[in-house]
Amino acid sequence: MKNLFKTTLLFATIACGFYACTEDYFEFEKIKVDDWNPSFAVPLISSNLSLADIVVRQDTNGDIFTTANGGLEIVYRSSVLSSDTSTVINIPTENFADTFTVSQATNGLLDSMPPRPPFNNGQRLNFNASTQKKIIDNSRFGIIVDSMTLKTGTLAFTLENSFPYELTITAKFRTFTDSLGDTLVLNYVIPAARPNTQVRSQIVDLRGYQVNLSEDEDGNPADNTLPIDLQYSIQLESGVASNRDDKLTMTGAITNIDFKEFYGSLGSTPLPLESDSIAIDFFKNFQEFAKEDLFISNPTLRLTAKNSFSCPMNFEFTKLNAVNPNRNPSVIPFDIPIELQPLTINFPDKYGLVETVFELNNVNSNLDTILSHLTKSIAFDSEALFNPNGEPPRNGQRRNFMTDTSDLGLDLEFRIPFEGRANGFFIEDTINVTLKQVNDLTNGTLRIYAENGFPMDVDLQLTFLDSFNVELGKLILPSNPIYSNGYGMILPSAPTKLVGRDLEADGFTVNITDTKINEERLTNISKTRKVALSAKLSTEDAGNGTNVVFNSANRLNIIISLNSIVSIK
View: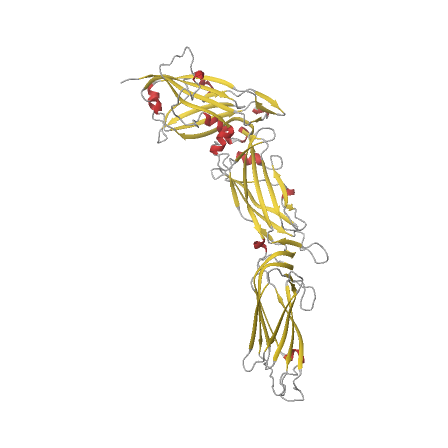
């Protein structure tokens, strides 16, 4: 309603500027009458504006829309709160290492084997060994990975042989399968260490691999565990002795881990979302007012949570405040119904995006107080909680799922309709102008022609200012009979009709006012560089709670002209 009221203000505000125009531009039939017969007529102001004209020019943050009932509303939006999977899962480089000696498999039989028969006669010894690596998640959410399909990832694997015998080795990553379903198996033949340790290394691209981290080296259920199976054989040689320090060393690292799909548990830790605010220009030029002076019917703050995590989730505002740094208190919290705090967020079965919508209005919240606060911005913080009823167990119940594109977002939409009521409510504005047209003119008459197509009375006053904001005079003086209302010039409301329970304009009223102006005032006005406009707005039957609706057809047409005598010196 800011701009709806500002329309009333700015049509006389010289929204189109103060300038001289041709008779073709001005509708002179509206300012010429037979008994006036001006010796010199100077058109000063011509303005014919709709509500949308003013809103588009004055408000850069909001968008104007036509409602279903033909009314207008201004909408402020923000979509800055979001969290993606990089916030939820963060797996660093995973390093692992293990050492295998023959004594581990033979109870020390080969710790010190004689180089000749009967013990070493060139036979082959076969061994099986398993190890495991715990995968760490740095996201602090207590993530449990049952399985992941990797988008990127690299396995660096190294074996070192210090036995004086040739080793044949099979390293099996039994929970890693490629896109064809084949298990990741690495095979090596490592020569004997004579005398130096023999090393074999390999780099494996894990892109597209399915990784299961839900079992340990013995095949039992486990969390975030990577089992590795080793099968290795030692080819003994007669006459070559081993010692207790001989060993097979395995080292490795999984780096650059990023997933395409995740299945498991996302934990139950709150996830803070980004903080932000919405700038509200609605009240930019409003004076302080009492709550009962202005009522805007049917404002709404619509909040839409957009979720593509397949996971039970609650959402809660940790802060949702209306902010006006010029008032005390400067911050007023929004009242959020208890059933919406926290709000249960809908989630998809697996893929896709699901929305959850909730709305604050004059009934379930304190939006009337928020608006009377002359809110300059809405500031908010929020957080989401995965699995509010606890982590999902593995006993066949639903586990959490997400993809690399899953995210959680929040859209805020603050709708302020141009409908309501005003009871002596004031707005003000100041614009820059130049009135060079009135130089060298003497006494004259200002004629104000107004067509008011808005459903409200406008009590209008213009104050002329110089470049230093020093007052040079007012348009309507107390001595003028039309000043009897005690403020300025009244532009009566357009005729109204009842539509439903609200009033709408039905046509327009015409008001023609002449006011005398002497040479001294004209001289002062010629120095004008700014015009301060103020308007007191009142709608019909506001005291009884009757609302009016403003629409795109409402217009206010004002023509101000000066009839004067040229002073030739």
